[in-house]
Image 1 (cartoon, rainbow, N blue to C red):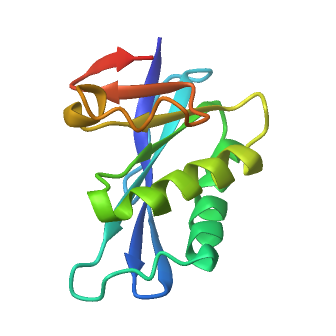
Image 2: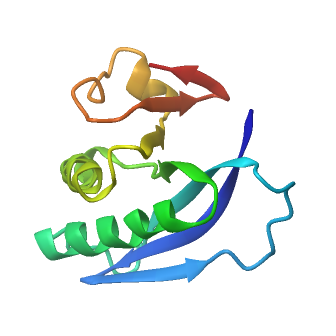
Length: 136
């Protein structure tokens, strides 16, 4: 058993990748196995460019989470729209390359992605969570 926690929020705005770290302390018993979650949000007022540079910068920000104490899994929480899927796919591929082999990669998934809209199956992820249950 372990604990998943919001480690940082990443905002994609125009060609920028803005990060906001967790602001509250995380109080868990020593040795607790952790899943560090990175929430990604797209700014509707200044839509992201979704460029290769933005993919690389976002992946690098998320990959830093594996170095936090007791983190065994890095999870990406991004409610990607249909037009954002190519960006998200490129991000997951790049992130998997940046993470060490011993770090698991997890994503949260919209229910529709798992039911009749399976675009996740070929991604290099260890698990996808939807509706509080594991789907692999």
